[in-house]
Length: 389
Length: 128
Image 1: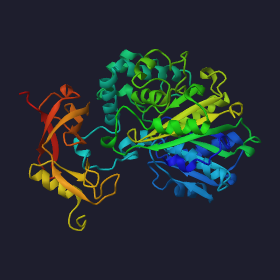
Image 2: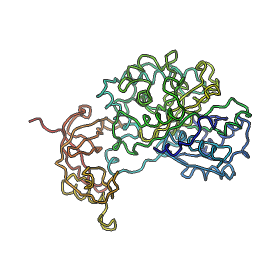
Image 3: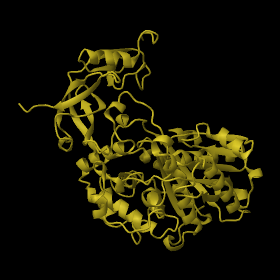
C-alpha cells in the first residue's frame, strides 16, 4: 500500500482553502492546457486570498503536458520548493492531495497548488491522450478506456444480474443533478430509454453510458490547518486519504467486479477514523455508468452485487438517501480527460455550502473517489468541515 | 535468463505463434503461470522462468462488442486459458454478440501481415 508510508499523517492537519474550475466546455482555438491550469489556479488563489507569490508547492498531472511541474512552474515563473508530477490517470489529484498532506505537514512547502488542464474536446481525445501500444492488447482494437469498463460491466451483469437499465439509472441520476448545476454541460432531461437507445459504443455501453469529452481544468490550494483559519473561506479539512494501484492494463485486473477502491477506501476510513455511514455526500468518479456502482459496493455503501438495484431505487438521485455526484458528474457536468480534480471540487463546495439548488443540507463530511486508467488506480479522499474534526 | 541482447520475451512469443503455438511462461520458484511474457516472473522477481506451449483451450471470462463507425461490430474478450493465465483476445467465426461468458474456445493464429505481427485469436469449441 502506497499509503502505508503516509501513516504518520494527522487527521485534519491540512485543509483545502481555495478551489476553482477553469472555463469548461469548448475553449477558443489554440488554447493551451496550461492556460486553463493558470486560469483555474488564479481563481483558486483569489478564492482564498493568497497570491502566486505565496505558492511554494506544485502538484501537476496532465496528459498533454508531459513534465507538468516543470512546465507549469515555467509558465507561472515560480520556483516551487516542493513539486510532484505523479500521473496515474484521473485519480492523480487525489494522490496529490495525499502527497501534499505529507509535504505540508513536514514543512516541505507551505502553500500547495494542485492543478489540471485539458483541451481534449478541441484537439480530439486521440491527440490529447495517445495510448501506449501494447502488443498483447492493441491488435484486438478495444475502444479504450471504454471497452475495459464495458467488460467489467458485462462480468458484473453475469455474476450479479445487474441490468443495462440499472446502469442507465446512473446516467439518469447524474443528469437530474446536472440540471441544478449552472456549470453543467448537459442542459436537458434524460430518460433510461434514451440511454438504452443511444448510439452503441462498446456493449453494454451506449454513448450515454460514457463520460463527456470536454475541455476544462481546475485547481485547489492547500495549507496547514493553523493558517487555513485566517483565510477567506471556511477551511475544508483533509480527514483521510488512501491510494491503491491494481494494474495498468485491463488484462491484468484480478477480478473485474472488485475495484481497488476497496483498499483505498479502507485506508481513508482508517485515517479519518470514520465509516461509510459517516459520509454525507459522495463524489464518485463516473467515467462510465459501471464505475459508481462498483465504488458504492467497494466503499461499503451496499453489498457486493447490490449496486445495480441500489442505484435503480433512486438512492443516488436528487431526493434519494445518499447524494452522489451532485455536480452532474463526468457523465453530465464535465469530463476533461482526467476528471479527479473536479470530483474533489464538488465535494469541497458541498462542505462549504456553496452548491445552491443542489446543496446537500448540513454537509460536514464528503468522500471523493478518484479512478485512473482502466480501473487501474484508485485514490480516496475524505473531506470534512470544522465540525467534523 | 537469456540475454536481452539475443532475444526478447515478445520475440519468443511471436516465434511460437509463427509455428502455430500459444506460448506462456511459468515461474519455476512458485510454479505459477503468467501472461504477458516478461523478463522476470511477476511477484517473485525470479529469473528462473520456463516457456511452455498451451493446449490452446480456454473459457471466456468477459466480453464486449465494439462499434467503430462504418465498420462491422468487433468482439473483444478476455480468455481464461486452461493452463491458468488470462489474456485479451477476439472470438471469431461467431456473431460477436453471441460470445458469452463461460463459452469454451480454442486458439488459432491470426497470421502476420506486412504491417503487423501474428497474434492469437479464438474460435468456439464445437460441441461434441
